[in-house]
Length: 90
Image (cartoon, rainbow, N blue to C red; front, side, top):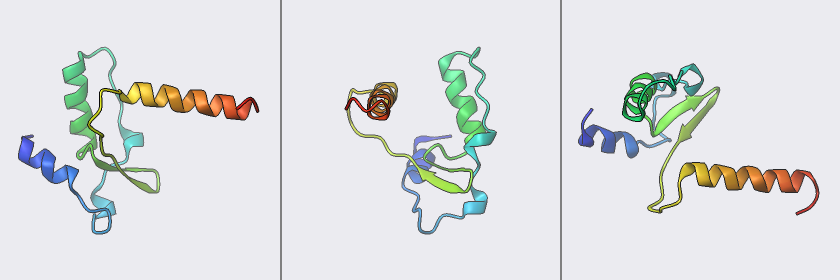
């Protein structure tokens, strides 16, 4: 897969995307024993378009901000917020 193909995938329009052509992320299996680059390549091979896919009956479009904060950092913050709000302390 080349950069031009990835750019086309990144700019897919949710209003016109063929839902039936998208793959469901629930069918993707990550082999954590593989090195990081191979895990990424295997994920892309399985999901097809890493920017637009299905999750059950929903279509998901992913975009990334130009920041040094990682997805793991954002998810940890989100989970901490949810945990705090569910205990009634925040």
